[in-house]
Amino acid sequence: MDFFELMQKRTSSRKFTGEALTEKEINQILKAGALAPVGSNRYGNVHLTVVTDKALLKKLAEASQIRRSNTQEMAAIINNVSNADEILEQANAYDPFYDAAAVIFVSHRKQDLEPNIQWCDVTSVVLAMHLATIEMGLGSCYMWFALDSMRRIPELDHTDLLQLPEDFEPLLGLAVGHIAEPLQERDLDPMRIGRTFL
Ligand SMILES: Cc1cc2nc3c(=O)[nH]c(=O)nc-3n(C[C@H](O)[C@H](O)[C@H](O)COP(=O)(O)O)c2cc1C
Image 1: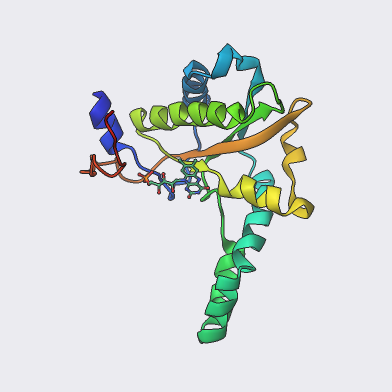
Image 2: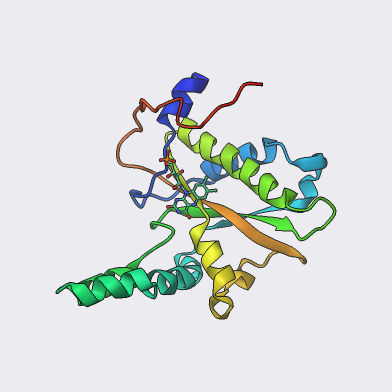
């Protein structure tokens, strides 16, 4: 696929068919991640965790569900509408992983040598895997909210279940799965990010 065709087909998928990914597909996505650039060539600082275990994803979704259902916004909505029960039920059923076939968590070694480079590293790796899924005809979506929710609600931080190597923390993820319809090229505004030429 031509690069700009790929970029125009690229979108965040939040609905998946439920079909499992093959080992070959998962390995292909992980390969793309490993081919991405990381700061100072420190690939040993990045770790990938593939989670297909639904029970584990359910645990990792708890903080997101609480965050969604406890917001002031949610309370305001509930006070003003007749279908409050329905809204609450939806909030509890909220799945930050969209029932994806797999979520690939990208973790980084805790470090102060190059402050904040960990965020750049994991984003670089996730973007490469995201683009690979588009090329493979799969769907995927960056996963920030679920991990951020666990950082904000330490009581519901179940990231220990990811069994990461010592001194690593999960910073970003990618939910991946099969999609019902092939992605179509989108006509996006190339001027949507501001520019300055100096
Ligand atoms: C760093 C980053 C984190 C994101 N986290 C989430 C997330 O947690 N959940 C989600 O549904 N989408 C997430 N997204 C997807 C964005 O909402 C999406 O890329 C943006 O709205 C543009 O839509 P598009 O990707 O379909 O073009 C994230 C995207 C990025 C780049």
